[in-house]
Length: 169
Image: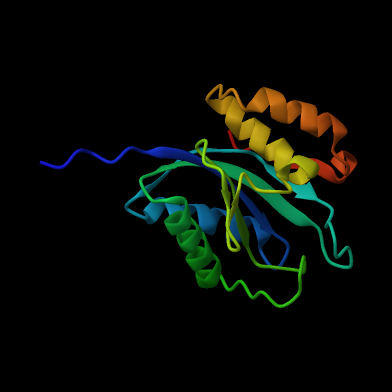
């Protein structure tokens, strides 16, 4: 008998600013939940946010989810990218409009710096549209990472551009 693989807790940021934004977000969560090795264990409310970087585009809906998985970080990233492809994501303009954007923010205590994956996400500490829903989902299960992230949120720019759009709990 083989030992059971340990589940890791990972946090994913989701965003959409094309078409039915809420539908793209909920469909992404559903597709991830359908994967045999991914279990969605928490989700934040939806927040409407001003675009960052390329500001000549419509507002985003953003949220964060917590998942448990036995996939490696690289395998989970591949699944996130596959989910984006299934939902029509096209990567042609950096920080441009998109049907769906899935970013792995944290994966357990793993630290990685690879060309295709950096953990924790290298810019999450600077972005209120990531921190606000991430802190919310961390606090659902009283995760200790929420407290230090609150300090980053106090210093983050763009908080005024993040508004609660729909409470999910």
